Image 1: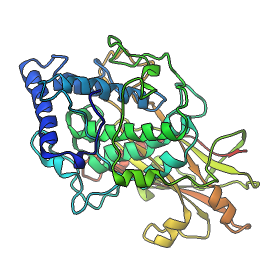
Image 2: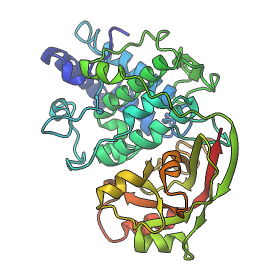
Image 3: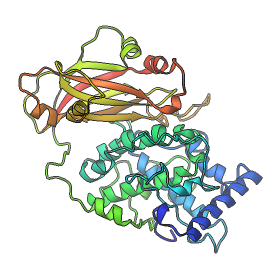
Image 4: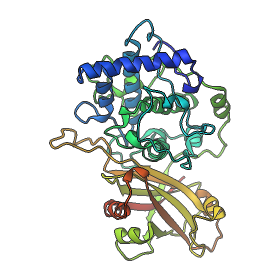
Length: 425
């Protein structure tokens, strides 16, 4: 790589112009030949198209695959029109820190970086737990994803939370759909920041070895580096990031001593629904599901494991609240939400799969998602004689479209495969 990746807001006018120029050269190549490997369309299709790529999600390939995509795309940018583009790197978008008086960095309004259809709603919140996940999570599997077919889980916390929320809710437009996401140039800056977060996590945790090093990354089998293990160590790739003072400040904070980490699994008890009707009927009327929590002996870490199927036609977020049964569920009550909130999981819809797709044995997005809500603090602080219930609140993402059929359609697809209270020691 010709230089460090930098915050898009820190680029000079000339540096930003050179980056946009490189993108424009790639766009012109695709206009002349849509199948040109060094054109923008082909590079975007490595993520979007199930026949050329596509992207990896819901496992430990997520971070390495996207690092590979950025790595090779950056090489194409630098070769676009040297010497002008020889030192171009993908600028990252630091979405931990909100923009002042606008939703997206101003650069993304410029020709060459703008894309129609992004969600303009400035009331939509950025994910509040991004920094906490990077600085406090110690389990690689829970941070970055589990190997395929691992009985403990699938998606890592950063993907099933901030990543999916940003794609399907905060940005939306082309980014809201896996089959069009990389058509929006914001994709590359967004994922450069995702990679920076992994880069920082690796730095903080001593560069753990990859869990599936010999897996071949889809779309890159003919490249010099094409295995998952090839993209674990940033130094081998000559990969570096220039941190802003803001990032240096937030990453300088040490995590609390009581950092959660999985150790020995002790037991799991199923949660029982407090309703009798089918899930779809309950969601149509309430958009919420409620489950009774079994009594739990004191343990260092107690998690609720939620397994659900992933709708193929839309995206949504499920928010969890663990509260006494005699405390009314009240989203409009800040005291309630701050006291009893235990986590969330954002589901980003899967690719539309063509007939005869040959990746059926390894789907682009898993057909189910495992989320764990840390309920330890609530169990410790709740009144000892309280009967606790877990309320799951379902919120469709904006890209579902308008109309009264949205919630009923999603309700028909949601199915809880497993909901249990897990205890770790």
